[in-house]
Picture 1 (spheres, one colour):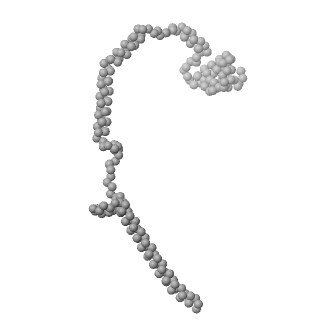
Picture 2 (picture 1 turned 45 degrees about the horizontal axis):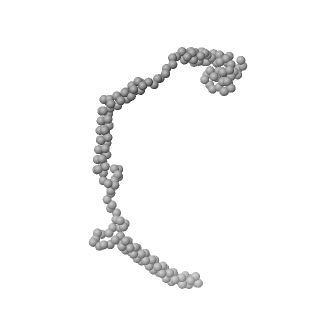
Picture 3 (picture 1 turned 90 degrees about the vertical axis):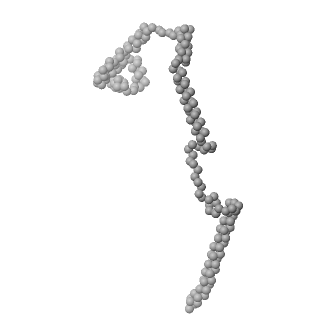
Length: 200
C-alpha cells in the first residue's frame, strides 16, 4: 500500500474529514477497511480508551436481531375506544376538577373587582401615571396686570403694549437725530478753524 493511502487512512482514524473520492475508495476495498480498523484500534490504545471497536459485521448482527424481534400491531377495537372515552369522562367529572374550577372563578372575580375599583376611583380623562396639574404662576400675556373690574381683553392689552413700544421707538429715534444734528453743527464750526490753520 502506498504511503499516500496510509496518510488519509490515519487521518480518518483520528476523526478528520476525508474527501468523497477517498470515502468511495474505502467503501469499495475491504483491505482498506481492515487497515482503517487497525488504525482506529491503535489510536484508541494511544488515547487510553477502554472501548472495544465494533466488528466489521456489526450491521449484519443488528439486522439478524431485528428479524427475530416480534411484530407489534395496534388493533382498533371498540372496547379500547370505549375505555379511553370512559377515562376522559372520569377525568372531566373527577374530584380534582371541581376545586380547580372554583379557584379559577374566584381569581376571575377578584381580578374584575380590583380593575373595576381602580377604574371607578380614577377621574375621567386622566391616566394613572399622569402627574397632577401645576399651578400656572406666569401671566398669559407675558406681563403682569393688576386685577380690576375692567372688561379689557388680552387683545386690547397687546394693542396698548404695541403702542407703547412704538412711542418708545420714536422717542429714541428723535434723540438720535438730535445728537446727529449737534455733531454736524460742531463739525461745521470746527471746519473753518482747521482751514485757517492750514492756510497759515
